[in-house]
Length: 220
Image (cartoon, rainbow, N blue to C red; front, side, top):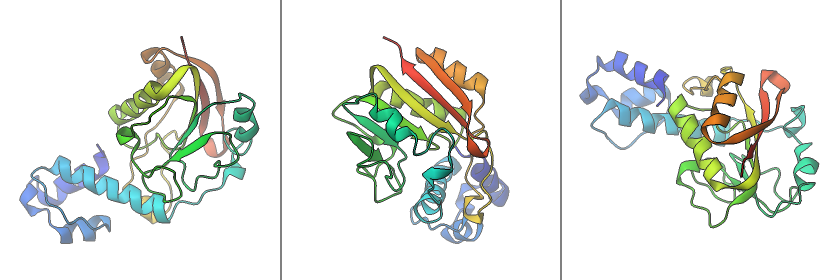
């Protein structure tokens, strides 16, 4: 759950859910929410979803050329593995489509994705040899991050690889990103997740823009 949005709603309403109106939501978060809820938590989840959609559908610039380890160089790196099936989680404009063999793109906000759906709602018919998660498993609290990593592990073939680029908690400077909660990834947590899901850490590097690049292999 997005703690920034939740705290703002509690402060604005003195913890009284009946005071949450569509006008208050629009004035505070600059998003439109037509439905009503019985709890502040439910409002928080929907407002968070709308803030993410607004930012990543309309304001997020995609530039795979700027990354030292997790950009266009991944094309040859992944193709050299001769993958049968590749999933790009949070693919954005689906830039790797047609460049990385047998790749499908998943993104809840971008119409260029092959499947425009949330990761946790995705029900694939196959498992994947390689999963890319380049800046996409990065939003919300630790429980959400763990749930999304778990989903990826469950979709991965034995001996398959997950390639990550993650944010150490740096807030984006665009005003549309004000209410987005960026999870503060760090190396101890990366290693902790590996132990949690029986993954082998193949690589951890500093990427461009203070991001972290790392690779897991699913242990047989």
